[in-house]
Length: 234
Image 1 (cartoon, rainbow, N blue to C red):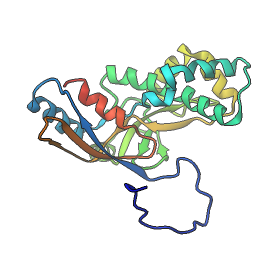
Image 2: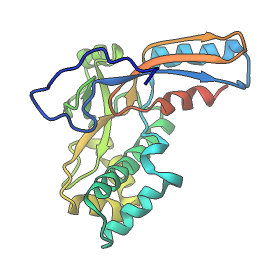
Image 3: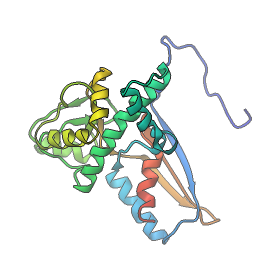
């Protein structure tokens, strides 16, 4: 393709699977911006400093969000092919995660510790806790080395404790058919960071008045969740 350049080509020692990437780089152009430039830039500055809630984007849930309903039907006995099953399981877990994150956004704890917190290591699927919040954890939280985490639901109890576990169980109970279906599918209890920091966030105003925003995200994160936070105030 005339617009594509292959920088390197070679054989890999292992099979490369779908999703096996370090991250993605985005350059997005936003047009018909409502509100002033100062307002937009203030919001972008806040996003760079604080990050954004790490929601799964709308595309995770299929056209019109239909993947969640299809997952419920699958758990009720409808047969689906193997590839579709994987997509529906992911949508079901994402639905519960987004529900937990939404509750913590309302409580202003999506980027702050709660009792019983499980900490997600930045740039990793590893996590640890719960343990008492101390100055060391506060320092690591402040420099984005760790993040509060939410559940990727599966069998057994979530590893969180205290108020976090109580919240997560309550949200999962609202979709008990999904929670039971994920447990029945033998999905493990895993974790995902509640906070997302766009890397190298930059922006400029183009001559036509459009706003060009660029940033990098790790694998599994959504550019739409970053722009959602900008659009909420502009």
